[in-house]
Image (cartoon, rainbow, N blue to C red):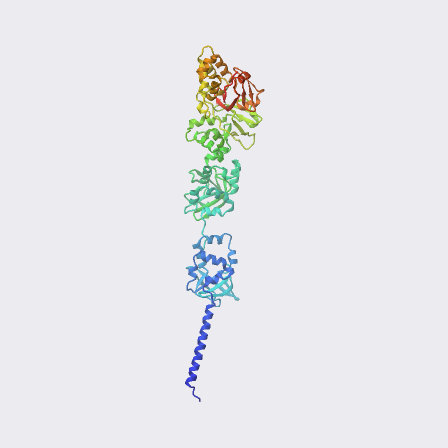
Length: 618
């Protein structure tokens, strides 16, 4: 036998070291081709995009990037799609519940498919196991989920793809709060829109609590809107909507249908009671049927009903002449006035029959009423009752033009011309209702007007004395002085006494500026000098020339048989197209000009005043 030399032994050792080193490097290279961890591996697989999103949402990324090792039974995107509608969205909206579901898909340790056997395998979700059955080369979990792709290795474990999402035994989806539940229910969209008008109520029904909500469907709201003559909820005053909503909420208990009994009464958030009627499986709340009962929420229960519940006040107002104002945002001042004047009970009386001329907010503003803050019930009652007739008069039954119409507080005066129907000259009837039309109610009929009516409280002399209340810049001190002078002179008629009588009269009243123009024309400084210059008889004649012995509103003028107007002092010509009074030829020769009517239809108890800017001369 030959002996191996030391040199050969040394060379052999070098070769062995090299081979060992090469082999070691090769093993290292095998480790490096594995993914970094199970999360990175899942992110590289297109069919696991939903799972990756869920891991991030549930804040499990750092856990699954840990040392492990882990075995993940990973539901594919198609597996998540098999879940019932809304389940995935609910899980993604509730990270804690989502984390429970995901932990139920993870087993501690690296378990390859070859190591799986028929057994219950504990998961990361404490106390919960997955049932594994291996048969005919197929792995089945919990009796139905199949492993479709096995043994996808990562640096800290292995992934097996499965075709269903696993849910632990006894798992219940988190219940949405009442607002979220309603938002997810297509038939409750109007209810949700209504709740959004009131942030405090919306917040309450979104937070912890024990509420019962009777939720009207969209069809129920639309039926109510049709009943009150509106097309959308935004047209209804917000305070009315808030009352309706609160009448649908019980804030002290979550009452399931099994908790309800026949004739049971429960107090709502509005402070009024609803009444339960129950027969077998049929449940009614007031006059509404429960369509879907016992929809549980995290903070109570919802019962879906087929009609909007109506509180006592609103029920009293429905189908009465108060209804169109109360349920219409554009009539807020009228509604406030009726309430403030304590007239709700009167005007909603079912046994009475009325005609209401209803002014909207713009009509109040046109009459100079923009706020009721400084008005009492005693102030408002005469105004409101002046809009109400004690009987039913439809649009085609209005009396002839020039006729007085008796109200609950004095007469209105009707003028009808080619431009429409007018009350007291200034107020137009913009909506005259016929029998059977929308504004024909159980206790009367409503007509719409464009200017609030104000009953007269002073005669035409008192109005002239208090002229500053009539129109800006219109003062009648000179006119009153002239009337007083004629009244006190024994040789003339007592004009003030006459004009304070029953009448009726129409006075074309010159302003102080109009008298100043006359003084300039006559070359005098004031009324006393004019009186001295022309005498009391001429003053009386001029004043009578401004008075007509009838009540003539501006809206009556188009109906006059001619342009010639007969006054107490003679005839004058009225130009209807320009509303100018043509002065006499003799007066014009003195340098006067035609008088223009600058304000009309100031109503007195015994007549009407029109303001003019020149003194007209016989």
